[in-house]
Image (cartoon, rainbow, N blue to C red):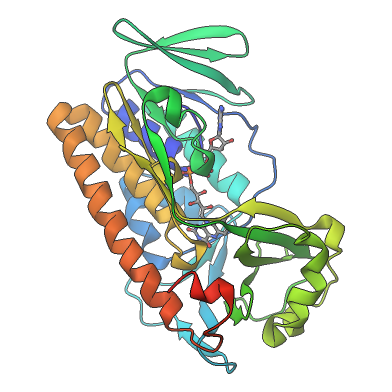
Length: 336
Ligand SMILES: Cc1cc2nc3c(=O)[nH]c(=O)nc-3n(C[C@H](O)[C@H](O)[C@H](O)COP(=O)(O)OP(=O)(O)OC[C@H]3O[C@@H](n4cnc5c(N)ncnc54)[C@H](O)[C@@H]3O)c2cc1C
């Protein structure tokens, strides 16, 4: 397993519980920069499948009662989870969340090597050679769980199909409003996401198309978003803003001889869809079950992944069409 994020942790847990010998090789020590995402209420289903629900509930993540949107209109409207059969959504501490899944994989019998970047994957007779910090591991199968960067996609045999150049400018305000709901707000040049985090801060992310000088324009982008600016109480200096890729892309194909891709490495979605971690868990579980079932299982996994991605592309167009206040602005024109 190359990569020990949500997709890698989920796949490793199911594979190891199914009797496969699994090594998860993860570059980080689960202590680096993470955005702090919102999980939908039905994330409970894959977490229960992994036997991780009780641990998740006790993990100090922040219940999220719903989402406020200023989308298609300057006036915000609420989409609360109050009637959802799975209860509230969640705002996660990503390092803790990913480490919890890795610990679950270890308990199921996987070996987790954190702080270990994979340097190369090479096809050899009967499998793969995976180079980690100068040492070589051999494996019959490689699962690419390296996220949106899909670091080894090409060495394994796939190519990346890229649909847009969306990036997110991410900053943190030192304090968050009492209202725990996430807020989405559209502006002429992109859209804002902001949400209180379990550690008391507020994460702010502006999604726009890649281009020069974006970080310096942070105050200008924020000033254009009335509702977001009002809740960003603690100042965020432009120098502290990070720019991270956030576009739509997918692996083509999703699986091949002795390898498959899961999570963002298989299909990376626009954050607007709120699908990322749920998909990472579900695809990790489905891919592991497919490997345990043999080649017919892997083929079915690839077909299902392609079908789900097509459905997502159609929904993405609908979401962006629902905002029509700036018909001539390049950001919105590119998405219709
Ligand atoms: C701005 C933004 C906001 C988002 N908001 C949300 C949200 O609110 N809700 C939601 O569900 N999703 C959201 N997402 C998407 C979500 O973050 C991803 O979909 C999710 O993290 C994918 O999980 P993954 O396991 O596939 O990949 P990742 O989480 O990227 O994990 C990949 C892992 O592989 C490791 N790795 C990479 N290369 C190597 C290597 N060479 N050797 C060893 N290890 C390696 C990395 O260290 C990492 O731990 C957002 C994304 C962005 C950019």
